[in-house]
Length: 530
Image (tube, rainbow, N blue to C red; front, side, top):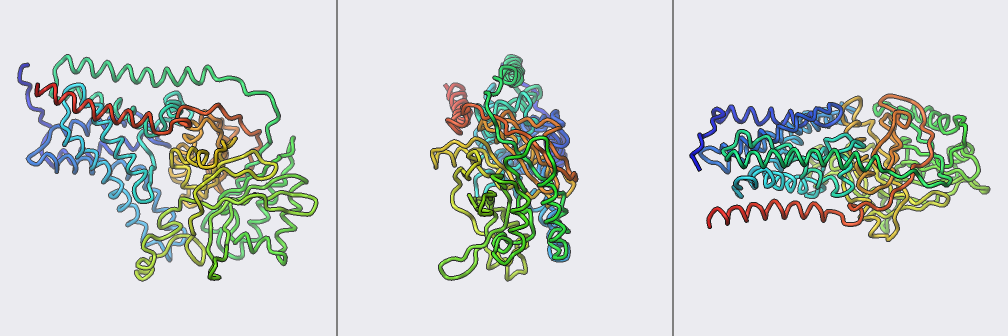
């Protein structure tokens, strides 16, 4: 093979700047921007890692990390907004939170770059090994410590679109591997490879993109009409209560009145199930339902006979020592002849670090840092999740806010209990994020859980975006309430599909992809040395 000219992209600082730009471009692929060509930023990173430097391993890690800083700066800048809700107490943390989160998450991109450079793949294997290294790093990001799989590259496709349907086969992590492989393919044009390798790589990339769209279109086109039968009617309530106003004691009465008015709004068909969002009321549910409280009778009278209310609530519980532990919960209530009855409780299992609890809480407290929750103490984590089956309500899997980010959460709960739910309920308090990109990204990621499991997902948030989403991840405009809107969504519960391959086999498909990446690297290297 003739010796190929060395690629010259400029000095070290130029490459570092381009790495940040590549990350910014890739981050813009996610909602609300939807600039999918930005994913080619991963191809640019592959080229920059291949260029190397005096210390190629160090350069690969640094360039991957710098791309990650750009990517997560676009993806998570909204994280500063919750600290401004109570600016006097937490406002000073906002800039540190934005910078440290982006820099910390970017370490996984650096790890992906380092792994790729260590493997040093050749020829056609370059793109697939790159996809394997970075998708494996993204899997680690979703699992290490508490995990934070926000804006996986595979979730850049709009949920409900043709490409997103591949998540039903291999989940969001498998779709991340496929997305990275396609996005990195243009790099072969600039890499020191033979014309034959370029032709093969580009042809495979185009074929993969065609299959991604074609397979998704076929799945959506061949969908079966829903089976006949009476589906329960849902009412999703969005009261548009600003987080900055919610915890003022003088506002409690008006907030309760707003929720009750929306709950009782006339409808053509009476809702069977009313849904309020996470932490709907600024109070502990135990106090509101206590015998001496006026709230219980008022809430009872707002519901009709045999109507259920699923409400996000803060709940207190005394332990064996008499100390009160607080939980972020979903509470199911039902109106019956004798009054209001609690028919089910789910306590949030995965808590948000610094938002709902403090890692190393004792040390943080001494430093003057506390979590963002408006509670006397941090929240406690609930037991491992299981489907919930309140009386008169089809079995559901609750996902409270942060829990909707995690692929396999519902699958794990189903396997634990041995019962497949009919739907997923995601209650969330996206009011923390204001009018930023955060709620729109959260909606997109939550919709992927519907595609993965073949189950409809219903989202209830106080300020938007609330939605009723079918099992293909789609929510038409009539089934949404946008940011800042007040109102209700009345709709029948969409039907569930048969369990998807992902629901049956989990991350097995993704594991095969990682083995393919590693195996290609090993085989090509052995062939080269033979």
